[in-house]
Image 1 (tube, rainbow, N blue to C red):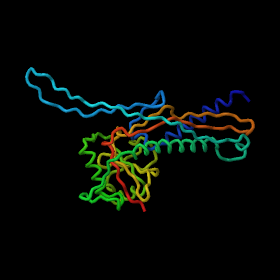
Image 2: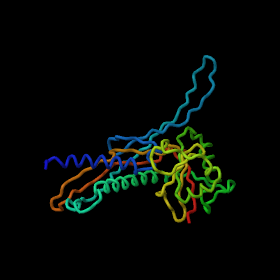
Image 3: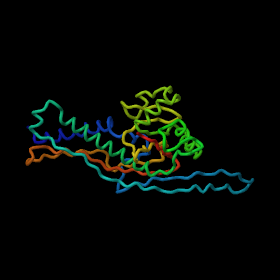
Image 4: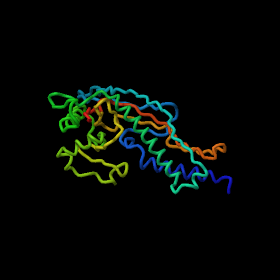
Length: 278
């Protein structure tokens, strides 16, 4: 056997992990502002305020907008997902162990990506709660709560430009299906989604997606209505794979790893909807 056969094995496995991550990995990464190939321990995202137009007298000085500029720093963290492939076990099983580990690693890293994004969302402070709108912490995801969040984004001049998203838990997805306006809207086809094989639907100018990993605080599930630019995601190293032979174990150790981070950029661009989940 060629002494370089392991290199072919490594490349093949790495390709499988990357493809599996794209298919089964993060659901939220395509919905936020993302920066790749970051060099260093952190990434800096620019935050630009709003300008104001003003009249100018004839022959006068053009008024200056004095647009506020600020930055938000996103720190990267390293994550690993590894396991062993015993040389002789591969001969005794009727499953493709390499594919099993590729999918397992991709799922693990995908969940970690979403955990980082959800943790950034949880730092938001604007919430769709108001007695006049009939929204409280004692109900699920109601029509009134959704419309209040929609109104809050509009009142804050958050762009309605096709880059709005909403992520809810599966219980809240069931709540939505009892709302006539949501249930009767046309479902989005697979070809229009940034990922495949998942529930998703457009409503109120946003793409709604169910997710099992949203924070559950007691009996309250934190759901979010947001604009893509409100949350930032940085990638220092996308998925990489390392495979090493350990003679003392008579096995390959297969390790997939990545370096990523996420941070809240604009608090006005995201609204939390707290929903009771029995």
